[in-house]
Image (cartoon, rainbow, N blue to C red; front, top):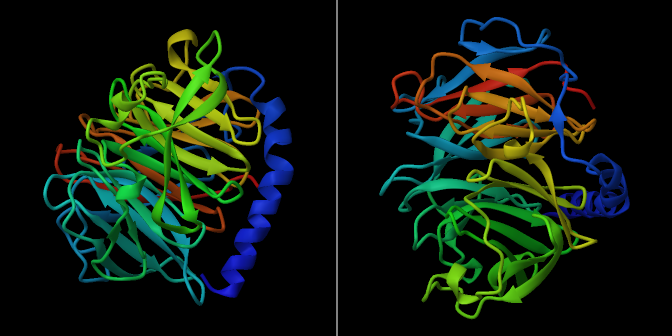
Length: 382
């Protein structure tokens, strides 16, 4: 991290500490309910088969097994979790995992400042079933392997085929990672019916080589409550990390995770919930509860990201292939829908650093095999 990046990260951390908890205390006072989208209803599908609100447009960026247009880089199968990173000299890079066995890994697409594609290349090889993950404030991508011996791999989005395993962050069925730059910790989800919520505290932040892995215990009558963190005795997973601390709390199928303004958001697919963890208050709440919200358009929750406006965007793993918004007004509504992609799922939603473009993928496309990655542009609110 150079001096300029460090100062930007420091400013973001101060802003998070000042605005996050107080802002979201009101916004998350109640579970979100179906309501109008700030962008209005969805229009009929465009030429890419995507339904969008008025004023928005989509373009196809890449297809599995084909070179990314304008480059020699082949795009991977099963594109999954993703994030963007600012590039030196302007532009940005979109990173995407590959959730396939044996040859999973991750790849990147580099964009010029005008949005045209500059390059595409692999940034991680030799791993398997790379599902979600998360970006770091120091410009690295954490790629998470979703299998019983899965690890977190720290990757440089600008370099070809590299990546370093971080076993101190636990060996288990990893799903996503979210970095809190204020508390200097990483929060981790586990994709198991009895999965856990973990946090990793590096010995010397931001180095992830060594540190302390802990698991959450939630105290309260309902699904939320105050969180206590208990040490995981054997992070290398013998026995399985989720069984090592019987007093810890089970979460039904942990999926996406994202940190924003003092809050860690994550999803659990087994009970169709979106959660918020207020770091300063050590308080866990349910933002969206599909089982107890009649008429909600959001089902099969998966990857999650947060826009600069503070709105949450939650992808669906199947169902009717919608990317839904949970607005800062606590309304749940579809933001977009992909038509004709039966048997697929929406993955990897991520905004550009400027917040004016959104990337996502249909993991298995229209034929159940070839994934397609898209960009959406439009009047995203500040």
